[in-house]
Length: 308
Length: 272
Image 1: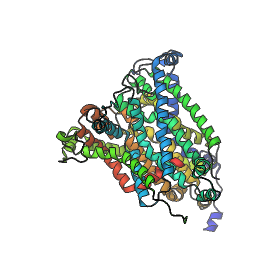
Image 2: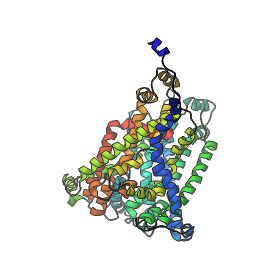
Image 3: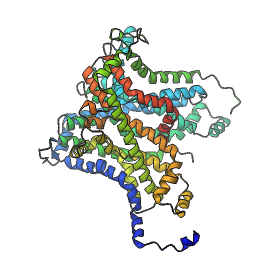
Image 4: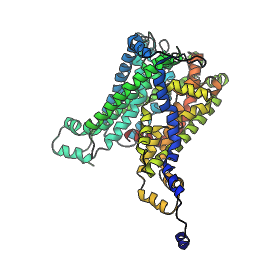
């Protein structure tokens, strides 16, 4: 065998050339899909944002320059959607970061079988389909017959129009979006917390540090990568996560009180059939998201404390 | 660990019990409402007096739910398979070779995660129409056949694989594909399994793309089937809850069996 190997003919040149393409053969499927369905469409969206087009196959897009952008920035629709998007995002932060962080710290000493049972239960909302969550909460919060209002009336309050009152509907949708996240975030914090080297706590205790000092100077800094990660996820995706609930439960109403930029794009695109407006809004949102995520990444590098 | 006796964690248990209640009660309420006859649908009792399967019979009669569940299963399984295969191949290219353009390809794949679907939905819709993918399962799978997240998880798992073993396989004359399938992939089975679970659940629960693509209820997936159903049956709560329960059952069963693995794979994806 070894002898045969010695007499093997030397590698031919064409084969060597082929080698340079080899990694690209492996990359091709993934890159093709992403180019076809993400990057080229992104460029097309940018192009479309300068046109007026009703998306009917036989109609021709008409070039309108910056009109779509000017209209978006001057008409009240976009302004309200932007304000609501900020409300969705900031309203979600306590549910996706604040409360879970507090819970994870309060329960960090829990051990034993109960811990695993809690873990299994509080994760459930994460795997429930968004539309199922929408339907179930629509039933629980129903104005006339829902359980929550039945209880409220039982203790003497008036029924609340959770999805019908323009003052409240947005917060109801924030709650449903957050309901799916609280458990997951809590588990993420708990995992990060239990990864902290316990000798730090011992050392601090020996030095006579108070519980508060341990929390402020050891726990929170070492949890900061997770805090920043979840904050960034909420900034980038919070308003997108709410889309299902807007579409399934309120349709942006009542009185436009629950719409946000993602819902606005959907309305422009597939209800009023103005592709130019929808894509222009999309490009604006994408630009802002890009800036926000760069900011988040920069602050993650600067603020996060790593244990290494 | 410490010799000091700890106080009973009453507060911690109280907090966890409350959180567990908030997480589970809505699901429980869906479940129990689905067994209620219409005459006691508005009762606040925790369990129906006379549980009935009527709502399930009515759902099966008014909506092709079994076909829809089959469509959803087919869609989620194919999407998962496609994402894992494309992710595995792409990750292998980036781990095995250092080559010009490699970094760019890596960044290109990773950043695709930042493009919100709503921004590209119109061009995607136009493309799907041109390719004749409207109202089809293939149309649901093809645009999702590769995903940044899946590729990155596999890439990170693969990078931890000992370089020396890859080199040894190469010395033995194994081609790159054989090294991948015979040596590397079997050794990262655990991360592959957990990323598959994540893919499957998120494909199953996907809402927006099917919403755009699917026209007829026979071709739909559960999320959209439920949406149709909600618009049609409005406030027939027993029926809606039975449909929602049927739609959630497969995922909840997977969760019941693989509870540990599911939670762990979500957590690991978060603390990546």
